[in-house]
Image 1: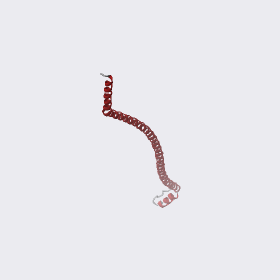
Image 2: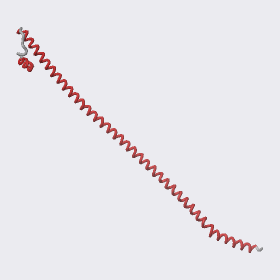
Image 3: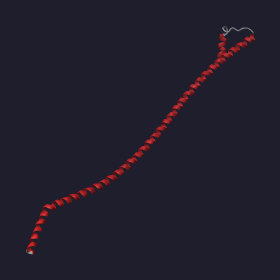
Image 4: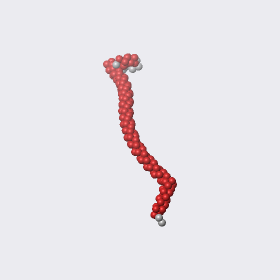
Length: 156
């Protein structure tokens, strides 16, 4: 066997092997590597999008929290204003009720004063008649002197 013929045969078989590898093996390997590259690139892009979404969500949550705090402060302030308004309404209603009670009491007092004056007039008239009777030392007939007693009551 000749070393040159063996070497040339091996070179031919090597060339055929490379051609078969380039024709049938290399394209699927390149496709697998390209798919893997694309998958890695997609994963990195998804990671970037996830990071951006996380930052956006953090900003949104901070904004929502700030808005919620503002709303709660506004609600508390509104409740305080409403409470003050209710207190003022209660004070006004209490004053009106107190004025009614005072007016009723004044009217009742006035009625009692009028009754007392009437009782006093009657009593003074009786005392005047009793005094006149003692002075005259005779019996005075009340039915005869009714006009005189009515006039005397009105004058008192």
